[in-house]
Each structure stands twice: as structure tokens, then as C-alpha cells.
Image 1 (tube, rainbow, N blue to C red):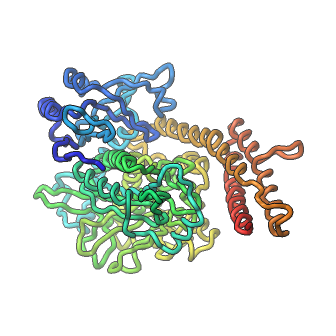
Image 2 (image 1 turned 90 degrees about the horizontal axis):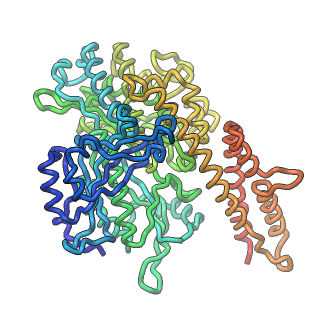
Image 3 (image 1 turned 180 degrees about the horizontal axis):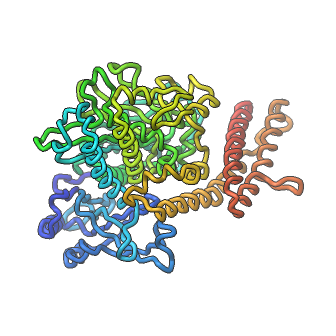
Length: 638
């Protein structure tokens, strides 16, 4: 039980209170805050987390706020940029966003009786004193470029104001990019192994979704929501998700065998703040649940064969007019006549057309592709849903981009990108998303397209030519794309989805012209794109070779013969023979045959990545067949 007086603790230092005097005053008023940490985000989405004593920070605040602190650039994910012989990287504080205090609830300050806190300051990474790098830099520059270019597009194409409650671009005081993420995650008691059959059955029967939480899960969830509100995140909801099984109470009176999926949602913010907020929320969730003896997993697919965890990312565009009024640029003048404004339709078209090069920033890990499989509400097709009519908002959960709208509230209109997972680099997801939107908006406005024109474009059929979207593609479906289309039809109409990280990152080579959308005003330079590509390939190959393949061997070793030769049926014998053959084919070499694991290892070592990727897909299928065969074999044994 956490028994701290939260009202005595400092959770946030808002952006408007970042003067030296105010920071010093707040830190001295809260002696439980003992450390300061500059939080830079590399291209892999990893954040720095050093401990600077508060006393030293106050003494050298002027210098630290201006010049930051140094880190070893070769130890963060910045390949081709920070090398072993050129590794000077500084972490420069960002004074334009909120700073948060990260409390260690297991380490109590003796003087105040409060947990020890670390002030986490979001920061930018600076290489060699001149080159700003990293994920926060990319998002900052994407936001700046988007705002500057959009206002010019509206000014140069004034016809669009006829579709908005705006007289002209001169009415606009500020463009605001709003974003939010939904965080799904699994919690469990340590060391408990998942019973995949029970999890799958509970999911099919919908026994867990939005059910009442109980025991330590309920307490931890409620405590987490309370603490998140103290940070000012304005929590909207916390609830059980579709995955999980009912926890059991042991003889000790405590719940054990906890295995549940949860979701937490909080209010949107401007794009940079939204990404920073998600980063902090995950730390709070993990810390609080661990205080109650529960492990937290932000993996996209922690349990094979059961629903994975998404981090649906919402993106919108609004303007603040000089008279103080807020206007949603996605919303049409008449929501009963049109789904979206021309700007909204253009933004949607930009995501859909360019998603092949957005996807490497969204799904960059093996874990991500474990989730992106047909049948688990995880999107694999580049397709959107608008709704069967403007009066009936879409709730199609099988599409990549959902249109969220409320006829009674124009400010609610936004897009929901459903492919990200909790380990996606949200900074890069949002940056890539807005740069793609800008490309579509530019094409739409320069072609002087109306909402009706763009509805026809988004709804085009395969083979129909379009001014912007590809001829041999479709981009809209109001049907379940998994039930209403064959796999062959999905590939033909919506494009073939990548199956591995290698196939996904190869979009950079396959669609070089589309990478130009990220290079506008050097938001992402050629060097940055090459650095990101190398980092992604390196992580994929290393994890596959040194983690996934050894784990596969452990699966093979656990599939042991269990029947007694003197007390079995021919079904048992045949089942075991099939399992033994699969085990050998996957993991055991002979003089006549090289196992699948060895073939993948050799392909990776030779950097034959096309072959390694194909073999990875084949191996996944074989392991899935083995799991099923072994489960059927075990069921027949007394």
C-alpha cells in the first residue's frame, strides 16, 4: 500500500515556470527531490537517465540549462552519426515543455517521509556542438516545418477557406498539432507462465473486456490513475482490455496467477508534449504496478496466439484565430454533408499514400510484427474507413487509419493510426505522420480539390486513375478487411504487407521518391535516414540471432516425449513422430540436413538478409505448427 501524502509532493514543473528563480524555489521547497536527469531520446526511442545531485544542478544551473551534460554518443542509437572515434554528444534541456518528477516509491527520504524524486527534463541531443540529432529533434523540426508550410499553403490557396469557418490565412494566429496515445499493456504475477489455451478461450468468449478489476490489479490501476492526475495528465479512463484470464486467490488469501491486459487513456496535448507525456506515463505505470508485486509488459505481443497490445496514436490539426476562436482544420463546414474538409481529406490521403515509408518508423521490431497478424484487430492493410454515411461514424476496427468524428462537436475530428504499439517510437511516429499529412494537404490544395472531390479519390476503385493516389490500389473499406477479402484480394487492393522488419525497412529502397516528404527543410536528412535504417537492421538481425533463435531452441527442448510406450495409442505414437520430425527440422543438424535455425544463423552472419527474412517467416510457421501439434498430443494423454 502506498501511504504517501501526494499533496505534499511536486509532480510537474510546467513550461511557464522554467526560470532559474522558480526552479530553484521549487526544488528547495521539495527536498525529497534529490536528483535531476536530462532525458534525450535517440533514434531507437531509448531515453537517457542519469542522476545529477540537485545541489550541483542548482549551483551550475545556468551552464546546465544552456549547455546540458555530456554522454557517450557511441552508447546510444545514433549509427553513422556518433562513432567510437567521434562520440561527443551533449544533452540539452528543452525549456518549452513540462518537466516531470520521477518518484522512487521504494526509496523513502528519511527527513520528509516522502519517496525520493528525480526531476526528469526532456532534452535534445547535440553531436559535436553543431549537429542536433535524435527523435525529439526530428519531431520538433517536423512540427515547425508543418506549421510554416501549412500557413503558406492556405495563403496561396485561399479557396480552401470557403470550406472552413475562416475568412483568410490572415485570421490565423497559431496552428496547433494535437496528439494523443492509448496505452495498452499486460500485467502478471512474476514467473507465471501463460496458459495460451485458457487466454485464447477467454478472449473468444469476451470474458475480460471492460470487466471489473479485482485484487492487486484493481488497487494498482486505481493508484496509477490517481497519481497520473497529480501529474496533470487528465486521465480519461482506465479499464481491462480484451486479453487475460480471471485471477485466482490462493490459500494465503492473496491473488496469484494474475495475467490481465489493461488500457489507460489520457487527454491529448500538443504533439511534442504528447510524446513526452507517454514516456512518463509508462514509467509511472511500471513503477506503481511493481509496488503491488506485478510485472508490466509493454511488448506488442507478449503472449503468442492472444491479443497483442496497441498504442493507437491520434493526430489532429487545429488553428487558433486572432479573435481567440479555435477551429479544427479537419472538420467540414457542414458535418452533415461532408466527412472532412479538403485539408482533412488531404491529410488522410497523405498518410495512406505514404504509409509504406511511415511504417518503418511505426513497426521497427520483431515484436511489432508478432502483433501484426490477421484476426487480432491489428491492422495490416493500408486502408481507411469513413463510415457508411456522414451520420454514422465509423467503428471499423480492422483498418489502418480510423476517422474519429462527432457531428455535434467539430473539435473531436481526428485520425486514429491503429498500427503503433507501446514500444513504437512515438516521437518518430508522430513526426512521420504529420510530414505525410503535409504532402497530401499540399497536393490537395494545389489541385484545388473540394471535399466532394477528395471523397471520390479516397473511395476510388482499383484501376481508377487519381491525381494523387495510386491507380492500382483501393484506400477505403467499410467492411471487415479480414472476413470480406481473401489474402490475395487484400494484397492486390491494399498492397502486400511486410512480414518482417527487413521487408519493412526495405521500403526506403523501394520508394526513394516518397522519402522526400521527410527531407523537407532537412527534417530528416539523408544521414539521419541512413542512420535509422542501419540501427533498425542491426537490432533486427542481432535480436533474431541472439535472442529469438535461442528462445526457439528452448521451445524445442520443452517439447518432450510424454507417453508410455506400454500405455498409449497409435494416435499418440503418430503425434509424437510428427513432433519429433518438426523439432529436428527446426533445430537439429545432421550430416544430411542443416536445420532451419542453422540456416538462419548462417544467412545472418553472411548478411544475406533477404534469405534470412524469408527463412524467419518459414521458421515462425513451423514453430506455430509445432506448438499446435504438441498441444494436441498432450491433450490425448491420461
